[in-house]
Image 1 (cartoon, one colour):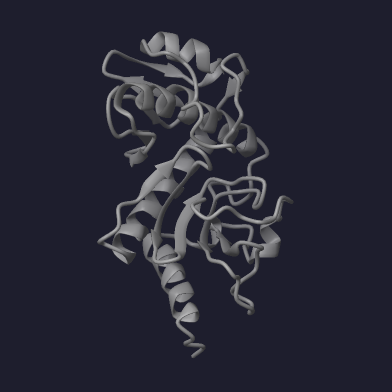
Image 2 (cartoon, helix red, strand yellow):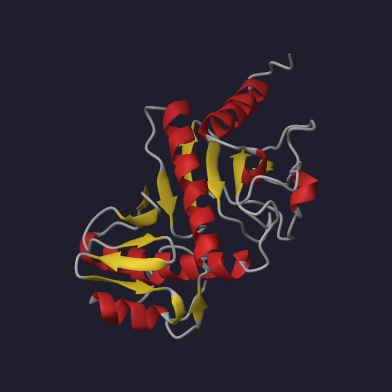
Length: 236
């Protein structure tokens, strides 16, 4: 996310206020972490890296059904497939190197720009489950719509380093992550330092709420607004 969290341990969804409903099927998918990992590696090594080398930018954006580059080369992920103007390739039983070769780009992350990220290898086996990938895409879409409604003057960016879509308003970061080492599934966040005291502020970097508990873009926007209200000192 845009403000680097302090914690390094995974926080189960039950600790951040989720019910066990909302995600397709009503339960958390056992294959979701593998899918998020595959999509993250592709985002860094097949999209952001080639875009940085061609156009000087690592900023990715949400697209219908997934996410993609915002400058040349024009590549995107739709569900569990890599897509270009010349074809589409499943992100399943494959590698970033094979996908990049099929799309005609040089594989590799945007070197030297950040220290975190997936640390993925071009030859790492990748497997993205189609249903999990659709859920991630839905969360990104919901998050992007909420961010635009919440702060129309800001432009949501999907950052390849932490693989979240977010904005920063003043000293506060708002966004949606597909899940990481801090929360084990897609979640919305309000990240601020120092972290205030109170039940809303439930993780080491601020506040997190699973997307399963936020059923549409309006609910995500309301969550962001709640964080803003609490930061302004309005406890009503």
